[in-house]
Image 1 (tube, rainbow, N blue to C red):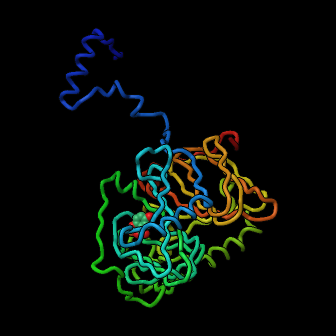
Image 2 (image 1 turned 90 degrees about the vertical axis):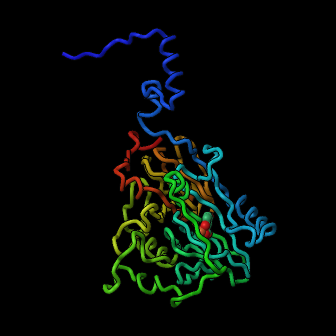
Length: 357
Ligand code: GTQ
Ligand code: FE2
């Protein structure tokens, strides 16, 4: 029979051993065992709400102070108060509010971190992605996947603003960030306007001569009218998810899977008075309130939100949502790193044992 053995050293001998190890860039695993192999994750990121009432004026102020010659991108970053000093909104995801003023362009570049934009105020501003000029309207989702050339422009009479979502903290952690400026400020438009929508935007009808070659969606533009129509059709008749209400995933039409390999996007509608059950998952999520008002309970903390606010749910934090209005729907856009965790067999989900926190 084998058995565990007793330690032989005095405290002094151990202390001197640990000091010697340190000088050789080593250490004893047993001294840090519990902080390495934790029973379960505890995110340093905290639940937080960024209020539109505060964000929008600061974006306008930025537009007054800084030109797009000096700011590669004029973005007010949303920094998680628990992640001191890191450029991150959750552990893995970054979000920010970007503003482009009338007559301005934000010059063309590309990078390995993937990005998405959820349009908050725009009546025809554009993003060009690899030669495809995409007009942006409120509620649209626009993708600029890994290493695609992109520039933004505003040829309208009013400021345009959107929420950026990037996998930047994740790409940084993996030391896989590359960046390249384009040779000109504005890339040439080489395709008919909104080509990806023309080619791939018909629900459930895929052009068979186009062969999927990329890991991301070939569709770069998910217009709000289609998203809203789908929610409206379903809301009166669907049970919906116990954790999210009527929730729809934006999909890659080639695969039915997430829009990009690192980020999935969802739109959800909470019906008047609807509140959900609590669960948690290892993926983290950033939410934008498209319309309505309500609150979420995240890790036991109540986060009240209203129109156009942004809030985050760190990984493995219990969360549940409630629409505070008895007459109006509440609509939330969100993005998450769940595809990363799923592809690495690290995605876990757990319902709250009592249903609510
Ligand atoms: O619009 O290209 O929020 O490159 C951060 C980095 C936006 C962009 C961000 C970017 C962009
Ligand atoms: Fe960019």
